[in-house]
Length: 186
Image 1 (cartoon, rainbow, N blue to C red):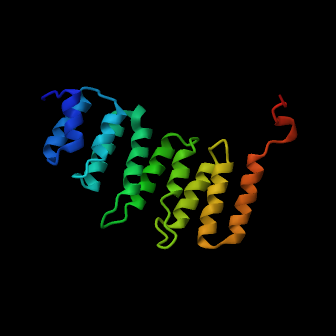
Image 2: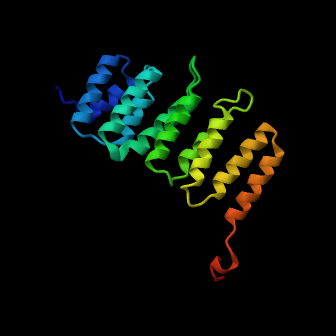
Image 3: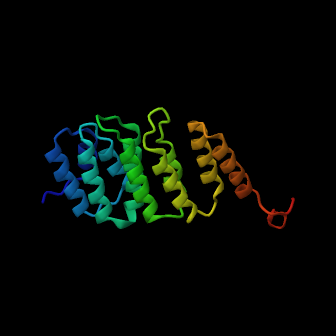
């Protein structure tokens, strides 16, 4: 297998339109144990790649380098969140936010970022999927206020003021410390 320099890898990932060339360079980077997430981000943003090709590279990278999997899945989600395709990529974005949350369930970012995918006019991704995902996060995330707040916002977007008010109250309760836990005044 030909080994490529970091500059060659960077150039290929960012500007090549030949899938076979990109694949060969990717294989070389993995074989060289290159774990530079910034380098692979160039690959994920390569406009010549299809959604399936991006997924192929991302899944392979996460499988090869378990310590990068959380970041890889977050980046895949962010790529699919902002790209448009014939098929709705919001569902792919949520899929990768869910995979990231499986790796680090107590990290709030995957749950919160997934909510940014919601389009209330089209109900894409389905609100029920997002709410179930956030509810799973409530079991693991330490600071619940941001998740409750995001749930309130989602319900507000759908016009469900009763649920929105309920979760806003929960966010306020979760965000306030009991008097004995407040830090002393300086």
